[in-house]
Length: 131
Ligand code: ATP
Ligand code: MG
Image (cartoon, rainbow, N blue to C red):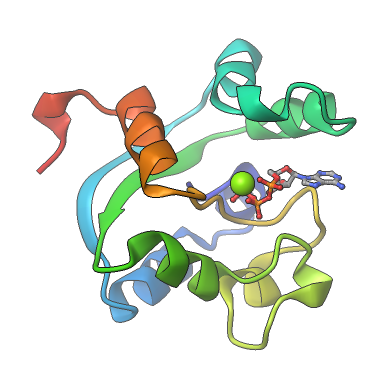
């Protein structure tokens, strides 16, 4: 996902270009504004964390870009491309180093396993929308 902060800052194009140049194939993509309830469902694994309310408020604060990306080693390679959760600790040249402002508003989301990538992809896209 491209999160609401990066959309508001006009960075959709820059981020998609980095994703393309890193060799990911786009399987599905859409631009949408999720509700707080939908954000709570998406981030249910973080329900007990102290930042859950802030995170779901933020993720429903404006439109996002959701996408399914395909590549060998996609999960780990995408995490390398996006950088550390906290942009202050993200490596030079990563998406979060370039475009994220804080640990809460950190420009992009990446799945943390193949299993969760499948669950998250199916959260946003029907089979007919995946190519
Ligand atoms: P994401 O799942 O969004 O790709 P991540 O895997 O790097 O990020 P997680 O630990 O899964 O990090 O946390 C999910 C999201 O919750 C983070 O991207 C961030 O937006 C938010 N978050 C994490 N830690 C904090 C925190 N200490 N304070 C505020 N928000 C946080
Ligand atoms: Mg995560």
